[in-house]
Each structure stands twice: as structure tokens, then as C-alpha cells.
Image (cartoon, rainbow, N blue to C red; front, side, top):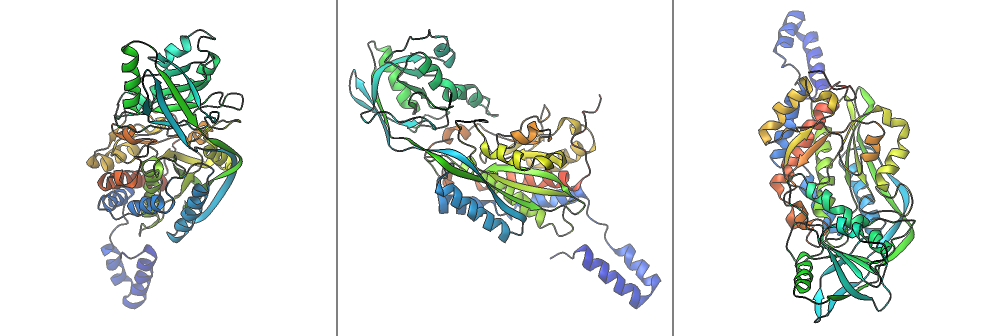
Length: 485
């Protein structure tokens, strides 16, 4: 165990009293200089890479004890209570839970079949917030739209009694851009289909795999409701319907769901601090979300995110030389995955935090979020005011040895949960992860602990701990404007 500065100072005082000024001066010259921020960042990086962090234990216990954690559920609440207790045990300060109301959605039982031209089962998942079907289900001919734009171009009233099917595929990309391009159909498709008279909506799952597993995800309320039942099809089943249609004739399917709503549910954020020694009111905010979808156990989305930020902050808390100048705050957000029937319609955990801490936001120095699985960090995006200069150069020296390069653009977004805080003027940072494989299991029953790669998890913790230390122990003004050329 390394000696603290306080113990070293006491030893030096005793030496002065015992040996006299000359000997004390020699002893003082022999004292090693205090570690620089860069040296401590390197130590944190290497400690995390060596597996000496709590991330794997955290995500293992979270997903094993509580399994899936749908927003507003007992599982989510119990997970939040457990997280608060664990954060206290780990030594964090100001640990508390901030509750807020929401409408919860419960999946129920769902099924789907092709009924003509020949009976075949289909693998589907109801989309979050989708209403139930009548007891006997809904049945109709399928009208296929290659893209969501094609559905939006269809005339009003053109789908009476029909089931709209958007067949667009999600493009595999490193940065997740393919998901961004595809997800509009999931969120807005049911409303567009309903405008045209459809009785239900289906889409090819927003995912990059070919497994016979459906990817769920939220859809949007319009005027306080989702008008028609909506489902995601497993990719092979979407292919099957397209091939049947190409053979000629109609494809008719039946869909059934017993989904329901809990109007008086609650969710919650868990907050914990590493108090700053000089500027405790200046906060570097680390976010991830504690809720998950109900089909898997939310290991990748976003159990590992909560583990990464907790482990990084714990390493900083345990730095023997000193605590950072600024406060490092961990927020485990609730209710990230769902939409809501009232404003602001989504990200209720993020909006709840921004509302509860409105008076503090002007003193928040920086905000970032881990919500993209556990594959390696390959790039770091900094606020526009520090993309050049000493801070950026130090970050590059510390992170490049673990494969993290500067991003081409400054950070402007960092994630759904911290978005309301960033919109209030807090600068963003982003540690960009390789998303090439992420959407193979995203929002499916395959999102389980065995998918977590320990080596890549540790690399994430290493990048977060090192960067956050440099930001929290420095005096850099992240709100400054970009430097000139």
C-alpha cells in the first residue's frame, strides 16, 4: 500500500524535530515529487487493463440477481436499491435514489402465424408501448414496403384491413449509423400505417443478425396512444414473407398480443459521488441506464455500461495520492428504453435528472454516457473547446497505447440519458465503441452475460478511468470556445 501525502508530511515533520534542519532538507530533497495527472491516468489505465476493477463482478451480479429490468417494474426498482447499497459499500458519497412517475408497459404473451397461402409459424416481438390485439388476434393481408419512405409515400386510406410490413434491412456499421437510419420505422411506423387504415404494423427487426430472434424496441405514442398493434419480425421470418410474396399471390398473417399498461408506475435514478477536494460543486457526470428490455437480461444493454462507469469511478475513488479536484458523479438512469404518452415523451430518467439538478447544471463541467455494449473503445471525442491543446495531447498520449484515437469531430452528443443535461449547456465527451457486432443481439433474448468479453470490458474501464481522471483533476474549462487555427 502506498503512503498517503498526509503520512509523508507527518514523517517529514518528525524527521525535522529529530535530526535538525540540515538533515531534514536532505530528506526533503529525497522525497519523490507528487505524481502528475498524466502519471496517475496511466496507472488507472493499466490497473483496469489488468482486470483489477469491479466491472465484471458488477454486471454479473446485476444480471444474475435481477435478470431483465423493464422500466417501471419491480425488477428495475430492486436493482436500483441493490445498486445504491453496493455503491455505498464501495465507498461512494451522497448515494441516493431519485424516483419519478411513468407509464410502464408489460409485454404479455404474443404470437404470429402465416395463415395463407399455407400455415407457418412466425417469430415476432411486440414493440414496446404497442397496444394488445383483440382476444382472437388480428388477421389481414400483408402489404410490403421496401423502405419506410415507401410507406410514408402511400396514399391516405390505402391500407384498410391490411397489415403494413416495412422490410428494410439494418446496415452493419462501426459507429451505429445503420441503426440510426433504420430505427425511424420502428418508432414512427405504427402511426404512419394507422393513418392509412392498417389494422397492424410489422417490420423487419432493427438488427444486423440472421438469427431467428426478434429485436424489440420502443415505438412512439401519438396523442397519448399507439394506435395499432406493432411487431418486429425475426430476420429469417421477414425473408420468408418476402419470398412468399415474390412467388405470387397474397400473404396473410395473424398477430396476437396481450400487452398491457401500468399507468401509475415509477422508475428511478441512482446517484453517487466521488466528492472533489477543491471544486466539489464542479461535476464530471458519468451516465448509463439501469433498465433493460425484457427478453434477455440486459447484460450488453446496458448492464455493462453501468459496470464500466462504476468501475472507472471506483478506481478514481481509490487513487492513493489524492482525490480529484472536481466531483465525479455516477448516475444510473431509469426508464431509458421506453417512450411515454406525455411530454417529454422519452428519456424520462435523463429529463428527471436535469430537472432535479437544474440549479447545479451551470457548474457541471462535462458529461458522458456508456450505452453501446462492451466492444472496445476505438476513438475519443472531446468538447469543441479542447480538441486542440495540452489537454487533448495528454489524452492522446494516455489512450493511444490502448487503441483509442482522437475522433475526427468534436463531441456534441453523448447518449440518450445525458442529452437533456447537454442540451442545458453542459459540454459532452464520448468514448466511441466498436458497434460492428452490437446490433446482432441488441434488444433480443440473446442479450445475456455470456456475451460480455472480459478483455474488452476492461479496456472500456481503462479508457473511462484515465479520461475522467484527467478531466476531473485538471482545471480545464471545457465550456470554452474552440481555439483558432
